[in-house]
Length: 231
Image (cartoon, rainbow, N blue to C red; front, side):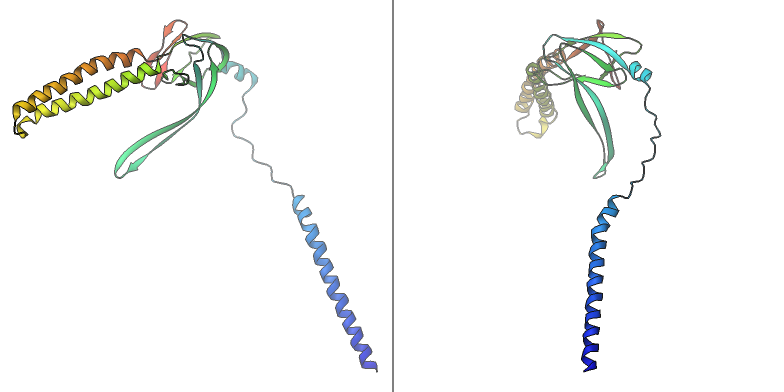
């Protein structure tokens, strides 16, 4: 009879040991997420560029009164500019991509960053302008915009493109007239096509130029430079 008692004791001991181990594992699993959540994150390193002082912020701002001959003209500020260059099938390329934000819809009075770059947007039927900057050393500025008509500008640009193509085609016919069976007909077609191209160029060039958007600061026209438009 003693052996069965010893076996029951051993089985009971084994059952208690396994149950205790399972309970300990469950308690550890429940405590692990809480312990992981309480681990503090390392503090980020301080920025090497100090924050601008209030005096610097006030110096960067300039009050601008913006008016336009066409209401609802939109002024945009460039907030980022990225440049890419490389080679594509042995041909070099260079591209730029800019991000712009709206800062003013004319007529408006707004404080602008004097060190940023701006442009007139092509929204609301207006021809976009080139990039320009604000003058330095002024506490107040008046900007007047004379936007070009987008429809007329597109007509002028289209006429200019067709005229250029026609002129080149006419010149090509005249230069290659000896390759045709009837040289006289080829030469005549070249003169007619080239002449039509010249007429279209005479119309498209002034229309395209006259419909550009103009920006004036304190009554003075801005200047065109290799880096854009400046006052």
